[in-house]
Image (cartoon, rainbow, N blue to C red; front, side, top):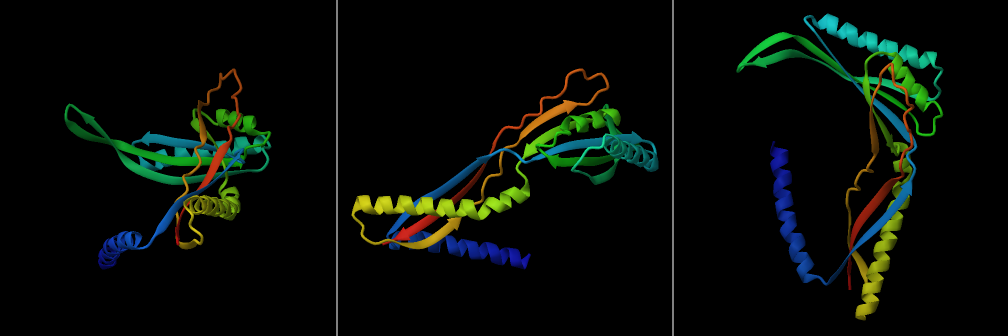
Length: 230
């Protein structure tokens, strides 16, 4: 708690100092921006399982059975290059509210399953079918740019945004007749996460039409604020 108060106190002191500094020092403030549009390289099937039972062991056993059935269906379909992860397992009391009164009726067990693979995997439809064969499950299909790809482009986007800021600053200086400028301070803002295309589906045994699995391109961006003085 003491560290938190110290941090907040430090920020309160820093803000007026920066404001005063900006008033006393001649500055050219520019925003540098870079952007890359690329096709998502990762497809994620997200499944949320939830079971109610009067006993914790029974609800947990049903979830484990569904997870094992899905793993077997994926293996049976001989799907290549995928990863199945189960996480966020929890058990809560099944509390029912009626006429203003609460009554406990057993337990609710829940768990998330995630199937991750390449967006170009030709077995995407097979994964859908494997989920269908595993029982009554609903899922979301999420196309996204993988974290590895984002990290590989981080330095490249930063370099481009800094060059963009420099170009704007020199244009301002040249237009206003300022001969020499130099960097005073750089602020790198948090980049917004790419907006992913998500397709919600219901897996059912009588699904007649194949799902359209066509991801849209995503946009990776980097923004910097650069303060030049002269």
